[in-house]
Length: 498
Image (cartoon, rainbow, N blue to C red; front, side):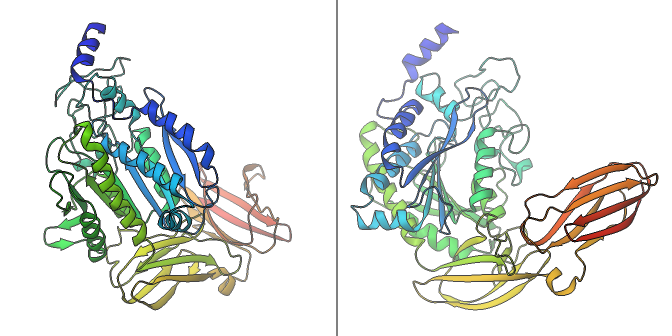
């Protein structure tokens, strides 16, 4: 094994101008501490094989707060053999931090947005490339056969370790890549099987990004291309006119370092499974865009600065674009002011229910990239009375709409608690209304002999409307429940069937 390793090292070692993962960490350790007021590191997870940290850098003026500002995401190194994305991310971090307070535009970008950068999603696989083991290694290092050895061949179809991370997302995963672990496009044993893609999923669920960019540099296929979602034959995705404008403008802001011509925007198929861009668009309405950087996977070192510079021009366009022709929606409970993760749909365009547009749980906010025009906004959340709002977005406007939804219980429920699915096979649903602060409602379930078989205490609930599902897991029969708060008690009979 050692002999084989050193032979590969001499043959495949990539130029030292490309940063290693350790050099990335050293860079972040040097620049983040002196910019703590606008930058911080979050470890999203650790890789399964080498236990490397999956690093996310957040840059914003109040970096420790989750502000109500447009969030944007940049991700590099889904594929280990594509280091240009890492170089772009490093330079982006450097430019934003070193120019803040000195450059008016950079300062505005940082003050008005929340910028998230995952510079090396696949550090394990990247070590295979930078350590000279295999220059064309694409996957991570998942130990598919559980033998404790990194099994590989440095050819397109090699022995079976590793998963192609950009085939591991759960959008049409069954159509993704290859089911065979010997393929460099192996999609994994199941969707989100990898800590790397799990990290991205958790981050996207939390932040609900407006735009998400992934950097690639293709060994096969076209280079210097902007891929965006999606077409289905002649049918186009509901947001197509908005995504197309962003993708085409982004392409025009990035030029080839060899020809000087702009990158080429291309809409891609709806049925391409497992891909990040289709997954994030479908699940969050995020404009997921893939940039194929350069005309080859690992260009000669002298080309790196220009490629990075030209791609940063594209980043600056995106950050400018988040300041105009934007709709900002913030949804709150009308009684308590608590943020609500409500559905926020533009009725003229959001015609496919599988494409979701939800406000975040943390702030109740969502941002939509639109064009000037007249629109109808429909806000809905279970347990609340929905609202429909007509509005006009003017040219270059950043429009804010705050929506306050009234819970149904406030209007129509005279009691504090309601029990649904009273005759049940597996679970019951209780709906209750908390009217006072610091109230900890309790649910008790007793069998017909008076023995308590289940107790749940709901702690630290703010005033408002709540809906809870309670799994029973009990023998069939008749049971009795008591729901009580500080000033209220209700008894109910429950018939449990199997």
